[in-house]
Image 1 (cartoon, rainbow, N blue to C red):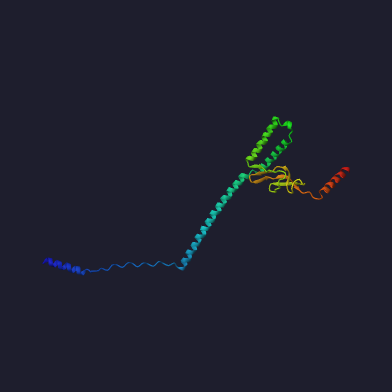
Image 2 (image 1 turned 135 degrees about the vertical axis):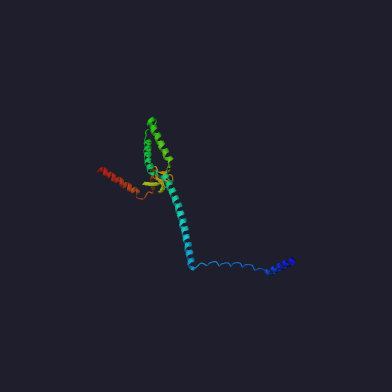
Length: 212
């Protein structure tokens, strides 16, 4: 009797539970907020600012790189050509040495003191070459080049073509790729028809001046 009453109560409890329990509904996805016109304008403004800052930074980087390159080039130029004035003065000394040896009598060349002076001349020449000083090769008949030569006088002659160098008065020199001192030269030009007449007139005037 007790068992039947427990069975009946169990069945009634089972009937009280719903057969299909309803599942809780999933929360609806919240719609993404759309930017307002003011917010969109502000974002665009900030984007433009960021782009401008980036462009300024890139220009600053380029300017810095250009500055470093120019500074390095200036240092290199100073290293190569900073001694320009001093080397010009040393060339004057070399000119004096050269003129002295060209006019030195042959009988004096074997003296020890002359040979000592010659060693100083050789040492000076080597010192100039060590610092990048090299002579400008100039020969008679060579075309005149204003980049390397300076014409101090002209010679009317048919022995050389017009514009050719007929003589060198002072040797020119280069300092690396630059002209340290141009060569002083005489340049040929063709004889004009009145050259002989002028020469005769000058000779006549000279004779008259002597007679006076």
